[in-house]
Length: 395
Image 1 (cartoon, rainbow, N blue to C red):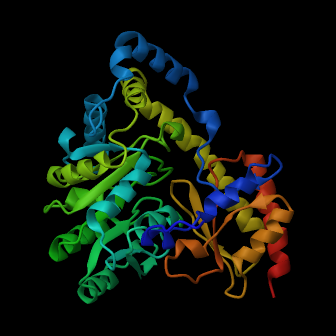
Image 2: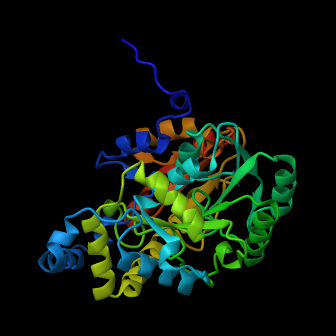
């Protein structure tokens, strides 16, 4: 018997990345597909000690329900860190703990989007954000981008055209999927446009701490004078993803609305996980840990770019990210990355085709590669295989 489901289920599709990752679980596959951190860098011993201290000192509290907003020490740490690193001015009450930044995106859809509303986003944009927002029946308008980020003259025109625009979604630092970073001036302009048109911005920042070179840039939210920009963040890329602890920060009145919808979703995030992370942060040098991550990822990025320069045929271009986890490859227009992927999988190499990162389709001659999860020798071997296969596609 077929049961009737909500209309929103027609908008929900399986994640292409998750489907590809099922294939890449085979040990012989060299995978550039997922955005997986390097597991050998997880601070297992330090977390074991943090767990032990929390349970010995506050076990009954750690195993109990806690506030929807999250545990206070962790929220205070997040607000302070964002203010120091991103130039914001958040308080503890400005921060809501979420199940990874992905839940923050889903809650943003619940808070802001009605069926038929428009989301303005970078072109391309984060695939899982498309999935999160699409469930609420919105449509997407893609804003053109260049090497400095979203082209804000185009954004302004689109804001004037689409009066039902309810949300602007951006990833200014080491964007997923392209690896590009917004200029300082574009961040300032975004804050001005958001305030002028009264359209909120979700500034997604899972990768900002992972800068390999160049100066750290303030968040667009640091230029927000009207409380229209909300920032997401996560411990998944700087500590470990298995805890699924992230956050969203913004104007305290708006965050209270997020608290209300989270209460209808899961009541709260894992108390023990939050307290363990807070204990780790109080007892360990997070900056030293992040520096180790940066050093490893920079080496892997360098090997990736150097090998692509050597092995990829003329006519294939790619971004050169200053940080983060990803680079973006553009093929000649006549090459379909999905067909290329099939050939690469035959040689036990995987990546993510670029088409799904464009919410309105097209651009099948692109793909994303991740460099954080594979050791250097496998990166070189995998890209060499990919380059050999690409040669056979070039006319």
